[in-house]
Image (cartoon, rainbow, N blue to C red):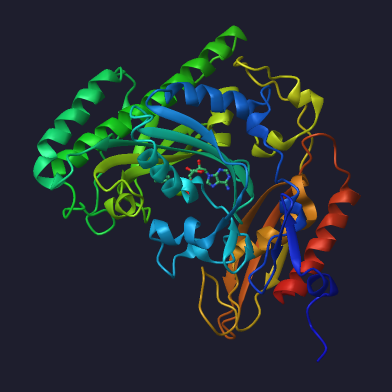
Length: 457
Ligand code: FA5
Ligand code: MG
């Protein structure tokens, strides 16, 4: 039977990542352009802004309470990335539109939380030899099929952090007063601050973030949450203070720090929050966090501990710290970028001249059976915006600054849907010619037809 798959796909039955060969299957959707980022380890390159940022954050979560770790290999099992964290079967994060699959049981990690269980288990194993180490940070590269804009990149870095408190061995719930008091004592050790936090205590909705009342008392959760928030606020204030110093050294001014907490949802924490910082005219989400689900701790050999965890976007924080305007810059090998940073020094990034942008609009009809939305089971392949992003990324790479949906239209008679995306082509390093942008855009148009079956308008 003749195969309809492209020859490249049928030939390539394994993917080689970090010297390991992985069998591919119908789940595989990781392109070489993404794999080419594996192993760059920017966070270890001591003069790189990501490494400098990592060090600064690690200094806020230091020993002996915290061990600071990194995880080099981005290939993890779906079990560790999703299952042990309690992701439901139909969670959109599991979808091939959102995640780079190596094969059906293996992905490029979508977050550093994929390592949570292993590090909780490590704390349990080291209980005798390193009793003071009750928390950790982990730095790693993570991978997502995501939007394209100045604060999103398909490969980015996260730092995971967690801290646990020991509870008496039996019936921890009845000992919750004791535990809460212990956590409150630790809270007092974190210096308080006078930065105004907008909405320090957003309303928590029981449906998304129930009290784990089988395991926790409200008092304990409040103590853990207070400790979590103050720890993270302190970290952000430290970053901001350093950024302000650098700015005033250069004679520039920084807008006053504005932060806010909002309620969030994660399958492995309850309650959960996100922390946002006001930056260049908009709220920028920098991290997610929460009180760790006790079931996860029970399944990770630390049943008698309670604690918090967070996961932050390292690029987002580095952008605040160094005033870096575009996330693509972190991957630049241009000396005009790299030479501006030195280990241990916080400086203000001086953009080399901004090159002109050239935008192209691409409008098309979705295939008749296609519907927009997240993951849909069975039937026609649903249209997902991330597939458009992936095609643009595959062809334009770092020459695309952002892609935005600028128009949507459903034909009143045929009910067919049409969309229009604006693709903004701009190099960080040179001026793109109109012909170059045109050529890229033509290829994008062809590929949209070929891979998504759309009809160009
Ligand atoms: C998570 O990934 C959770 N694992 C975080 C967490 C850990 C919650 C532990 C609770 C306990 P989220 O998908 O929101 O959450 O991503 C975390 C951060 O990564 C975001 O706040 C953002 O700063 C950054 N981030 C997310 N997507 C991108 C992207 N495409 N490019 C750059 N940074 C990103
Ligand atoms: Mg988020």
